[in-house]
Length: 435
Image 1: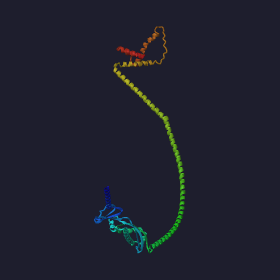
Image 2 (image 1 turned 120 degrees about the vertical axis):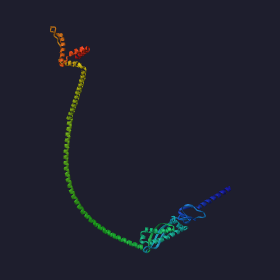
Image 3 (image 1 turned 180 degrees about the vertical axis):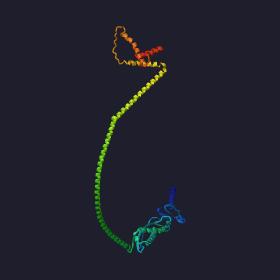
Image 4 (image 1 turned 60 degrees about the vertical axis):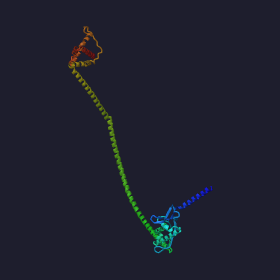
């Protein structure tokens, strides 16, 4: 158990020693520091062999027993810059107080200058060197400026000083961040005299300006009064002219109004006459339309109806004539086809109409009754009436022969001799028609 515990303690000590050794080999550099590791030759970007390397804001490993690590702070270092009895342009001694902020440059190339000059030095040493250089530059700049320029344009003075000291600061490996001039005085009272003179000049200029302004004000007042009077006169004239123009314009407007009224009256009469003419025209047109509706249109309709009726009658007559012509043509064709018997056929066909025509002649005679008187001689009475019937038939056939030149009895006898059966049938039929 004791042996195991001893082994554990030894291992722990070895681990702790290894960690301590590893920690001593690892170099960690914060952002506001620069680590300079020296002891081993290296070649810089310019091809120059140097015995150190620079690490800013990072970490690296160092070779134990060979490389050494030094640090430089990059924080700002404030410097109070002041010069006394520094002669300005014109041999006027001045006292100037200012403040500047510097730091070790981290720019590659300039940092090498700072490493060579301030490695291992305290910040107070860097502050003192920078202060002496800035004061020397301040005296040099003062010698090129007049007290008035130094005092009146301090920003320009500070910028000139920065431009002058910048090259020296870079040579030292430093950056000049800020330089401000706080106070400029002199021990001989030059600036005070300049101030009094400037004050007197300003007061004189102020009094002159006040007097001039007063005179200008009085002149302006007088000019204003004059302008006011002239403006009043001009305004009165303008009022009078405008009044006259108003009267003339009023008269013109009155005349135009009267003329407009007259034109309106004439236009009204014209419109009235025109309206009456249009009304009369409408009345005439209405009367025409009424006459057209009451007389012309019915007459035209009646005429058109008569024309249509005449056309219809003519069409009926025409068609009836055409039908009769067609019938006659048909009969003619039949008669022509019948040959010698055509005349007899015609007479037989016409017989019913002829008999009807003969009978029609006595239709107007109204016979209520017939009285037969026998005279006692044996030939009167009913036998006498019966004996008169053949004579009446013969008389009718004679009348037909006289009218047409055709002996019906002869035709009937000839037909009966030729075709007894047909003739008898025809006579029976004709007899029925005649009765």
